[in-house]
Image (cartoon, rainbow over all chains, first blue to last red; front, side, top):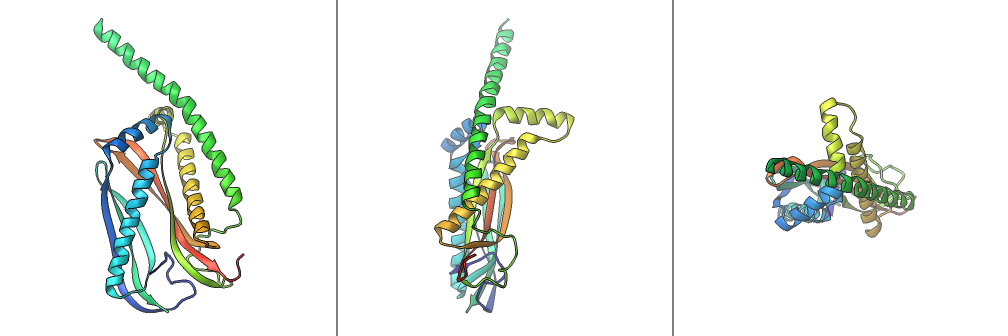
Length: 104
Length: 159
């Protein structure tokens, strides 16, 4: 599966369109991580636990999108976009979407 | 009398936190900027462009989606300063530098992924910022997330 956020796959031709595919996941933060982050909130700096949590969740969302594209018979997803939104306090939705296509 | 003692203790804790945050926050920021500048120099030769498609002169053999992200938080002292600023209005320098650090860090992580994936360049680079709220307290910011993403390309005629 070729993934790209450009409108075509560079160096290849799109032969068939399958439409929008998407994947999303909603994650809540771990309470222990929240305490550590509370400390980091005083001294400043990167919240590594959150970075990892979000990166992992985003990979999950991309994975779901890829599975949807596979089930349609596509071999690439182009023009991928990401969006993050806070659905509730302490929880975030990671959303990935794009267009499933066949490229040659 | 008791309330006076309690007030004193509370003020003391707040002051101690402010002093602690003033020194650690400044040190953390200095170290972070040093590390960002070092990596920016090292990966200057790897082009990351915001064009929506590949320049016509490039011969692409392979491409793939790459991402880099970071969640970063501002220290207690700067948050206090920003709170004061919100009363009088004007530029909040503390938050400007926070966002600057986060964006540059995310870009460097994107480039690192490109290097690890064996890509020669990144096209259609996009940056997205999202605010993360604390559980149970929507007023306080837990951190800012910056995501950088783009399409890594392997080239026949690597620039």
